[in-house]
Image 1 (cartoon, rainbow, N blue to C red):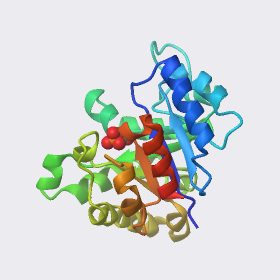
Image 2 (tube, protein in one colour):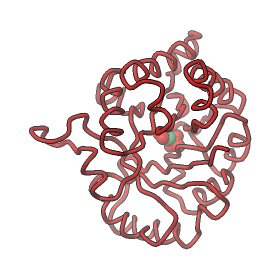
Image 3 (cartoon, protein in one colour):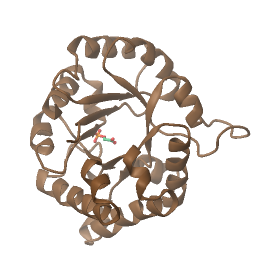
Amino acid sequence: MRRPLVAGNWKMNGSRADNSKLVEALVAGDPGADGAEVLLCPPFVYLWEVGRLIRESSLALSGQDLCAAASGAHTGEVSGAMLRDVGCRYVIVGHSERRSLYGEDDQAVARKYVAAQREGLVPILCVGESLAEREAGHTEAVVLRQLQAVLEVAGAASFAAAVLAYEPVWAIGTGKNATPDQAQQVHALLRARMAREDAIMAASLRILYGGSVKAANAHELFSMPDVDGGLVGGASLNVEEFLAICRAAG
Ligand code: PGA
């Protein structure tokens, strides 16, 4: 069976003081106690310190992004090897904010996915449609195109060591989550697409939902058959909310 996974994407939030309060309370609350795998994704500069704070816990560390290049003349960038070096096991790739605010197209995302795996990180590959794309009836085409770009470069077998995340752009940070049925529909589509490549891999591939997940809707979303946990933004900065979400996934 697929072990549920919840990743707390802090985005560009936090301070050393706030992080230690948040992480100490999370560790005390043992968010993995009900069986979910739980990741924290702090900004790069805090990874090392957060990694120290969760060392004795069941929590794991993830980057929010990485550079596709391995090293060298890439001022301002952080490589997958560096993420590994400070204790990351996972890295988010292709988050919609990277795509829309920083110009990452499907090919750039695919290169980052490959770079993550090359360095031994598990990529959490994000796909999702904008509101205009949904309203135009293009949801399926958009998420399949985003997935295809990675399949072409990395191959279906690579997904045995990856996680997918469906994050409808219109639901991110808006307080307006996809309904459980809307999420399930896209998750099932993604799994069916992967099953055409490799049924065994598809059955074990974890597909997370992201977009305004909170304690109040987590249980409903996570009880859908193809929703294997969540990529949680805003609510991951609130101890009680995040603990409740992790319990709902377990
Ligand atoms: P949100 O963000 O939970 O604040 O909507 C989700 C994400 O961007 O990963």
